[in-house]
Image (cartoon, rainbow over all chains, first blue to last red; front, side, top):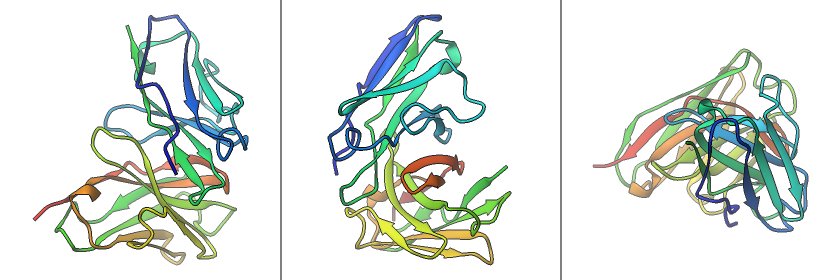
Length: 111
Length: 120
């Protein structure tokens, strides 16, 4: 099972919106509405930001939103803030030999 | 509030077995339809799912590690454990335990992670 493909880095200025893509196949992202997104600050554990493509856990800012089209899921961060600077990983349920697959990760830089 | 905490040796010799335990607090490991997973992250790299266990004891493993991995649960201690045999330097990583809120994923609670180094 190959990792989902994410851009290595995305950057934006404070207040702007950025979008991170997560591309898989019809066996994972495209086949199920079970994509989740995680934020990871240096030296910290990942934190769930989005699940089931577009649902936000309690306590997560509504500046974070998720969507999906075909085999590609996206995470959008609006009103970018300095605290959003972190690594972001997508994950999907998959019908392959392993139930979960993670993305390659994207480093978000706030300029 | 559910909390997870990994524990175990931080240094393991090559060819030996890595053993880690995850202690769950703030809720029973037996309650609800949760799946308990181990996930690892080599320094500077991405996340790799290792395997999971359900409270019934049923397990699933990453095929790339399946021959070397065993995950077990001790409901009396509210813990689940990871054993990875025949380790090499490639197994050096931060190991996380995490709870999946559903069969389909959604890792909603994570431990802080523990660094395991494989070196002689």
